[in-house]
Length: 148
Image (cartoon, rainbow, N blue to C red; front, side, top):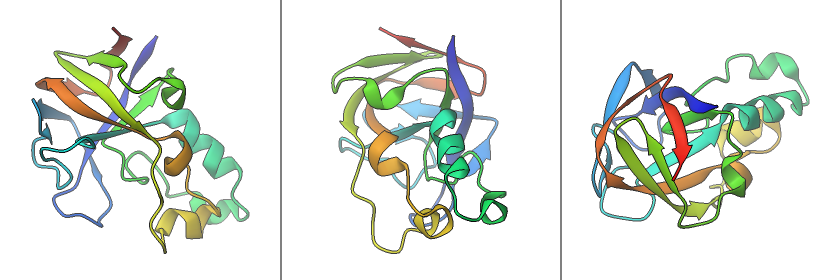
């Protein structure tokens, strides 16, 4: 079973996302209160916890990555049990009451990424995905993720 490990938001762009107990996905916007929300194709970012663990395991200095956790890669939704980067663009995910459509796989990492400095490389450009909100609703850790 695939499920949400954490929901993460940040009020300002360029800051680390903080894990919240629950959040509202707003149709055609993203997560209420998150700086990356808006009417564009990257309203919500998702990253598998398995990807985070692989990145941490590849770090040259394991002591430097101890503090990396959910939200550290600026993802809104951290998942477990689903290989996100293998989903095709256009796939629809149901999470709690909400539905998301995958719009982009990976992204170009900006120069000076804090994570790439710690780990040696950022996993978000290869394994993170982006989606737009088709149907709003509240989500929280533990919610099942279903490929529609």
